[in-house]
Length: 321
Image 1 (cartoon, rainbow, N blue to C red):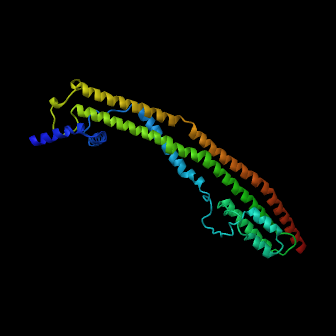
Image 2 (image 1 turned 45 degrees about the vertical axis):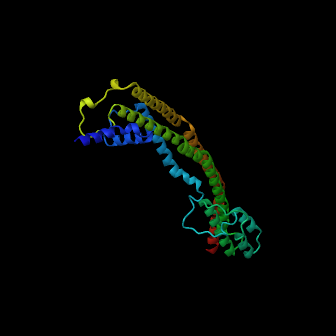
Image 3 (image 1 turned 135 degrees about the horizontal axis):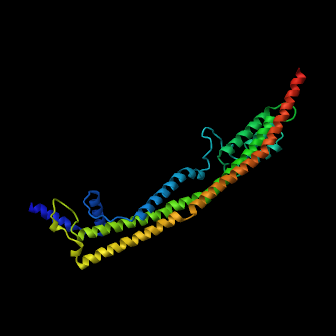
């Protein structure tokens, strides 16, 4: 029994002989095992700030998990299509210009497969539609034997040009979102919120240090077996040196808490996230306005070709009857 008490007594003196890191670890272990007394409580306002910061961090993580797709050019590119190197060699506009100068089917085919003059063309849904529409238009042109031009081929060519413009507008939108929204939200997540996390860790370190100092000087470093009331030490019995060490730890805890409060409030109050979100919406709005403008120009042209074809179709039916 005496050996057991001696072992417990030796554990009680460990706190004064170990490093601050080990002391904090020792205190944390005690708390996890339910061996700690008088754990210093953080102010309710501080706890509320922590919850708000955690919520803001989750918001950034959730939004960025989705909107980071704007950094990937091919996020809407169909996975089921296969385009060759020649398909991606030139823009639709360049191919249309080359086709307009072609006088034979061979020249037209050469225009479609002309070697690239720059980097491969973008892999977006609209660009893919543009390339498919132009290729389809040329297939119809090559097989057309009647008078004039095939109206569907003409319509597909115009649709191809419009689709390429839509794809370029989408890329312009993505560039704006990357620089004005994604960059800002990533900075908030990886810098501002990280600073808040670091400040909160400093508070936790200061608290553990404070509680470990209190426990060491009040004789509650670790409990093994039953203790008697006369084994406890009150604050009044602390030596001046012990009281000074505790007050020093308390001052550090208060300082770190105030610093963390300041950092967290700054993160929560900054207008940057909302400003960045406004930039995201503005970029999307500009893209959809541009898309509506392009399609508004195309629609009456396609409709005109369709009406003309309908009229010619009716005439041919009437002549046949």
